Every structure is written in structure tokens, then in C-alpha cells.
Image (cartoon, rainbow, N blue to C red; front, side):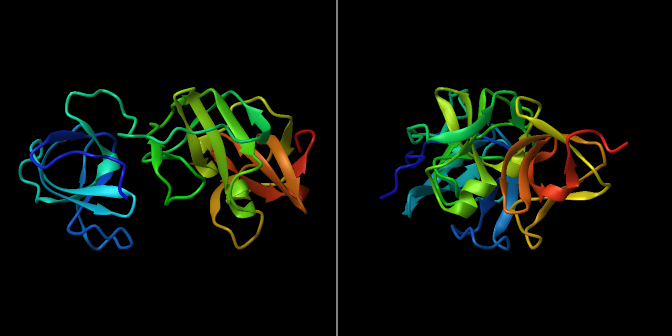
Length: 241
């Protein structure tokens, strides 16, 4: 039964984050049905409503960008018209997971980032953090999800009422872990500890990084360009010079 973003036909609501896609249908598996991207705080008038899985979808008319076509938008991207809160309607209340490594000086790195109730993109959104948002906790969790999810997501807090799982590549590290240095130029920082995994960025020689954990011959590290994995052989305790 749908529960997130519950509004009514004829309501006037606002978009609660940046980069929200308005679609010709409720199918999110393809980009071909994207009509346009709505702006944060665009005012929307609701013409139709239907439940799809855990979400309500709304057929809306953009009252801010009046030349835009009408289309479908998912309810958790909307907020009540008078609200200044960017937390989705009916957010999930989370219990903190167990974690083994954490730091308290991170921030969000990227746009259109979502905090979620579980470490996967099909779970509900708990918050829409903006680029640069300071985090009071970034943790490597141990008792939730699959091994792959634990290696590619982190658990984050902005405060007790704002917390959730964030894809680790979108979290910036700025201190608080034991640290090492990159020993080679153009070292690939990857999403997972395998050479077939996506590259987040490349790191220059002598870049200082924070160390989360090791897995086989890989090390999970925090950088100013996201959290990911590098081959352990590319790390040293001092600058390479």
C-alpha cells in the first residue's frame, strides 16, 4: 500500500528538492518518458492521483513554469505548499544500525543526492541533502543489507531527525580517521573492491585519505571526492615524494 507523499486531487504543493523529473508516465526504468526537470519550490497543482507500489504519483500542472507540459511526479518529491521543510512527507523512522568505523566531519558531495531508509535505491527517501551539507556522523554499518551494499553505502546523520543511508561516492571526507597517502599518480577510486567496478574519480600522488577498512588486497578510503576503494598497494604511511 502506498504511504509516501500523500496529497489530494486539487491540492497545490511544491517540489521539495532540485532535479526532479516530471514524466509522461510513472515508469522510472527509462529516461525516454521524462518531459522536463522541475526546479525546487516549483508550485504544482494536482489533477490526478494514483498508487504505484509504495508511492503515490500525481499528475500535475506547473504553476511556476507555466509553459511546461503536465505530467507525473512521485509524491515523495513534493511537500505541502506552505512547508519550508525538505524532509519528505511521512518519512521512515530509522533505528541506528551497528557500525564499526565512523567520523563526524563529512559532508554531501554532489547534487540530487538522497538519504534513504535502506542501502538501496528502491527504498524510501528520508531526506534530500544539498551539496555541501555538513554531516554529524558518517559510519560504516555492519548489520544491514548485503555485503555489496555495506561496501558501497554509508550511514549518515545531519541530526537525530535527519538520517539515512547515502551512496558512499556522494559523501566527502574531511578528517577523523587514521590516514594514509596515495603513492602513485592517477589511482582509480572505485565504488566496490574490484577492477570491474565503476570509477568514482582518480587520485593524485600524495593525496591524504582516511582509512575505513581493508578487504583482501583493497582498502576502503575517504577522500574529498567521495568514499570508495583503492588497491592497498597504492597506499603508504608517508608521502611518496
